[in-house]
Amino acid sequence: KIILLIVLIPCFCFSQREDSLTIGSICFSGLVKTKEWYLLRELRYKEGDKISFSDLEGIILLMNSDLRKTNLLTKIEITPLLDYNDKNEIHFQIYLQENWYVFPSLIAEIADRNFNVWWNEYNHALSRINLGLAIQHINLTGCNDEVALSYHFGYTKRAVAKYYRPAFNSKSRFGIGGALYYTEYKETPVTTVGNKQVFFKEGDKLLYTRREISLGFKYKRSNLWTFDIQFNHHRNSLDGELAEKFPDFFLNAETRQIYTQLSFSAQYFDLDHILKPTRGILAKWTITQTGIPVAEKYAYNSLFQTIKACHTMGRHLFLE
Image (cartoon, rainbow, N blue to C red; front, side, top):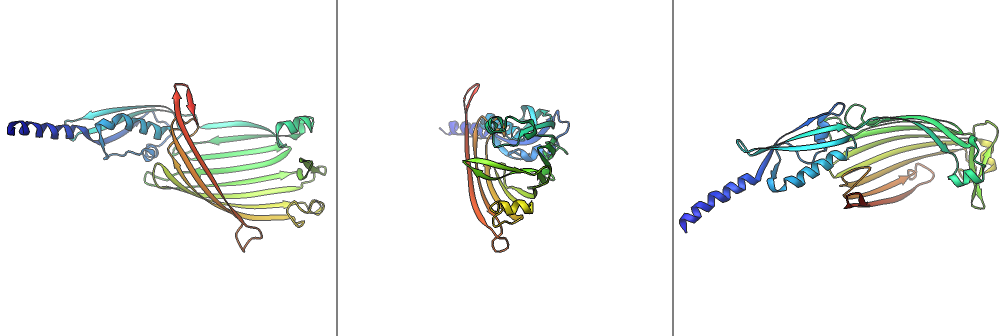
């Protein structure tokens, strides 16, 4: 019995030692634009972490999921390399192919509530179509920072400029973004009659102008939890004669509408992809305060919740 015990103890210790691994390095190849530090920041496993050999397959799937969620990559191949000679280390070699990051586009959209209204009530008039140009870069400096510019002309003039940066370095937990919006209307819906919008137009006279400035901050607590604070300031103006004819547009025949929105969001994101999830869950709660109490004339608040679950049913079938 004593001899058997002496034999089993080393075997048990050896088995435990073999199952326990330390991540020695995580190396990427194939990158052109994206920064390595940003991808390392997105992974839930870091160099120096202790893992079990028996969990290796699941860990590789989670690492693949973390990288897919960035929406920056079209191909991910993760190869684990075991080294038992020194410190029971495991090294991950990750080969990547990057996405196409620049998206120019042409804009063609109807100004009406839906296609049916435009086709039947306004005889599919081409003059009621907004045309425009837009360009979007979703990885401007290599850290998944997005810049977008667009300009609409035709029925409605609209200009948009926005930028968002999720991180500044590998240890950064904070992101920041901002946007500017400007829209001009020479024809605008002023009321509804018989459940239909009534539009008003007076030649080429500018009737309604909307301006908005947006500023946001994001805190990444972990790979699954993020918190956002969003600030939006709106300044809208209406033609004086139109305000007198339709006093309920801004209420009490006012020609200006100025208000502020402040929202706070908490999000748990464990989907394996932003656009095409095949597994995982998303939960998000957003509290919005529109109008500053006392300081602004009108104020109210709202709560919005989203819960999404995704599951793979078959090779080409996914439940969401």
